[in-house]
Length: 170
Image (tube, rainbow, N blue to C red; front, side, top):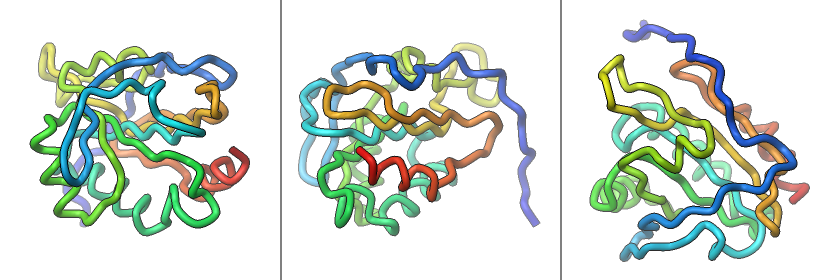
């Protein structure tokens, strides 16, 4: 039996298809190190995946699914897959190591990037504490949004098959 409530979230005013993705610079964490990196520095099409803090079950579920489906590899190897959450670079490094991931994750502890994309929510009703909603934005090589999905309830997950269909078109 599931031991949590499903919570409907307020409607998200998120970046829409056809809009240019807001650029930002945050620490981008890989399996060996991290460095301040701008979204605009990522080459080619980008799958930008917002997710709750590392260690929360939705984060684990989302990244295990992406890893197991091989996004950014095989038929979609020209797509850069990058995550964004409120977790620190140190937490991201541990998360990447524990999951055996070969993806990089942006650290956005202030949730300002999530706010710019319309992918934030209050964390458990705590005043001033926000986290990212699960969200996927697929950006073409010019970083124009080609696909956008933002969770409408907690927990909620993207339709991975639908995302893959759009990934293959980038």
